Image 1: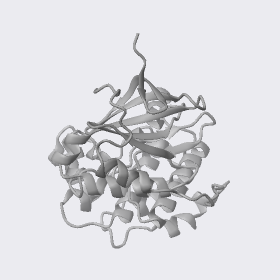
Image 2: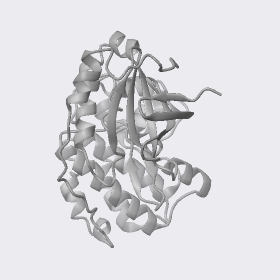
Image 3: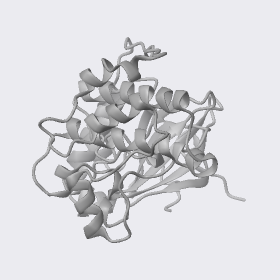
Image 4: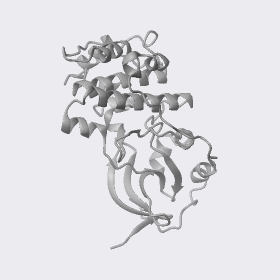
Length: 300
């Protein structure tokens, strides 16, 4: 059996696939650490004119160091591929947890929501907007803490991502102003998605759902949803302020943080930002197709 290597990483099975990338399980042969390796096809990136965007997004991802965001370790390349080395998270998707266990307890839903808001708020402070927040992009680590994945890298290609994603069948979490193809504020749109996620955590199903896309868009644009009678009162009033179809009057994160329901048993994330982050490898990877290539990489 041929062991496939990329630099110091031994590459194993495929653990995920997206529109522009495959994600492989890999191991650092020097440290034994498990990582997730996102493999992008260089020619696809060039064809879709995504080079500058991906460079920018990767740079930002390297700068974003927060306990609630999947960590980006480094970037490597061969002539045909670009490899993004990410922290490997073992607890699976929050989505699977909801699928298997149904709705969560109020306390558990609140804790995940608090962690989600912490991570999203931190990224917004760095000028990074996710634009595709949904339970499939929220991973759980071995301790059950939430980790936002694909932060920044989800916004490919520029602007058109939500339109691109909607055809793939996940418009349920997207803010009405994004669906209407007008310009939108990334931070405010992310808040809407966080509100939909909170609803799903507490209810176990989506607030907006319809097999017919036109009807679904109409429900989202009018914010036509209802909370079941057993819904916790505090969660309900917060969700109503988040799922405001008018982005101008929609609640902001600073006010979510001051909400009484949100603040209950809130433990802010502890994070240290003292390491120097080197961004040289990103330009090297994109500017010189030979960088990091020993010629031994298997083309996948």
